[in-house]
Amino acid sequence: MNRFFASLLLACATFQVGYAQQDSVVIKGKILNLNGKLYRQAPSITFSRNNILAASNELSVNADLQPDGSFRASLPLLAASEEIYLDYGGQVFTTFLAKAGELEITFDADSMFKTARLFRFRGVNANANNYYPYYLDQEKKLFEANRSLGADFERSFWNQGLQGAKQSLLQRGNLRQRALTALLSEGKQSDELSEWVNSIVEDERATFLMEYSLANLIELSAADDADVKRFGTSPLTYQKVMRVNRFREYATRSANIRMPQSRRNASSLPVDRIARLVLRYVAPLTSAETDKLNLIVQKKNVDREELDLLSRLYKRGGAALATVASFERNNTPVMEAYEGPTRELLLAAAFADDFFRYDLDEKAALYQDLQQNMQNAGLKRSLAELYRMEVKDSADIRLAEKAALTKIPGEVLPGIWLAQSNMNGKTWVEDVQKLYLGRPVYVVNWDMYSDACKEDIAFIPALRSQLPEDVVFLFLHTSDPDRAQVTEEGFDSGERKLWKQFIVRNRLTGTHLFLDPEQVFQMNYRTPSLPGTYYIIRPDGRYHSRNAPSPAKIEEVVKAIREARQK
Image (cartoon, rainbow, N blue to C red):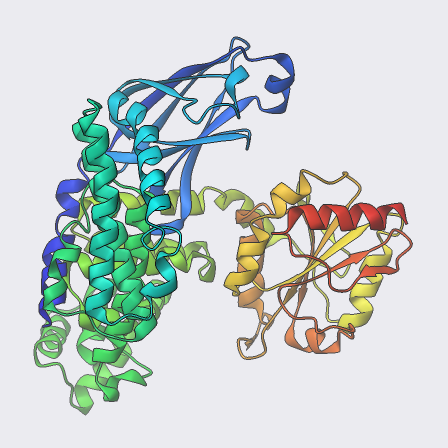
């Protein structure tokens, strides 16, 4: 095994140390001079933190403000210390370091937007949090004086040789360390701040190195072992999550490269893996069947009689076995390349990435399988948190799944209207649009399997909050013919089920039509009806724009819809 990966296996074992028994931080405080107007505009403060397995998912809690400006919230922690992100009404933000205990935050509403050091901390990690803005000031000054390591760093970084890239990263890290040293020389001493900054600096260096490797298609070597030694240590920061995210990309690429050509195009699992799954999921088994399966696991091949036995037993495993086997088959390179905490990390993160691909029963089967086979307590807690967040809407999802849909949108949950039909796609969509004559319509062509679409859709709630209530959001889910399946329940019934689940899970209020591949083909827009395209229809039913801005461009969309509404 490559020494780089051998050292990584050891480094990942530190998750057990870095992520101790789960505890909580109690965050309390007060907004001084809070006036009535500000209170009405923003009656709560949001606190969020990361999860090591999912860069895009944050656990958030809202702390309601009292009339005197005081607030209180409790946030469970996954690590011994973690970065927490404060957002007050989208107007002021800050990052602070938390650990188990009580932490107090105060800031003056009259000083918002007027000072760079708005927040004052007491309690756990108080010195680190009070000094952190001073560190950022020092770092900014040094980067401005050394632009080649600051604002212009990436202009030359990617085009260097590997040794040159490492040297540049070392110089950039040393510059950031100088900012910390300058702070300490001023008497602003804090062990927690030093640990925090050192962690960020090291994780940034490792992240850049893996990005360099990915960009230049090179393998890292044993000489880079030092870059992964803090892979799983506390504090848990956004930079560390980014480091894990890049490692996942790097490890997946490396696993595929190292996989034998004979296995790359295999459509099934190796027989020994199938035998292990049968032993786990099929019951009861006779002693003779158990002995045969253990023999297959040991020798990793089968004769004709054993293959027939394995096939018969596999069919007895039911849906749970089929789901787990499919997941392992899709992750075969990782399964064969890694072991221990590294494999656990990669498989758990892959599962979290693909939550939307599985229905509730499949999620439950995979979650139970991963949890039963994970040894790392910190990773188990991280996965458990993501899973709880994912299935919290299970009751509503079940209701949506049972809803009988027709060509006329029906409200299956408050604010969520669904429809499906076998009609010609163009005719059906036009009929539905006529239902909303007199109201402006924002049409979203999307596909839940498209990462770009999901990134755009994440802005929908913020966009909706800035538009009049009469604006209609019409979502057209466009299925990919390469993905389509025909079953006894109808065309692409499995994808329709996941479509409902995604809408409910993400609270996409509005009207939703599911277009199968044939209906997508029948659409006759002047621009292709592809995922990630947007249209605006005026209240008179005419198109205002067939190339409207995406939801991510909130100001542009609001302006365009208001113009369409006036016409």
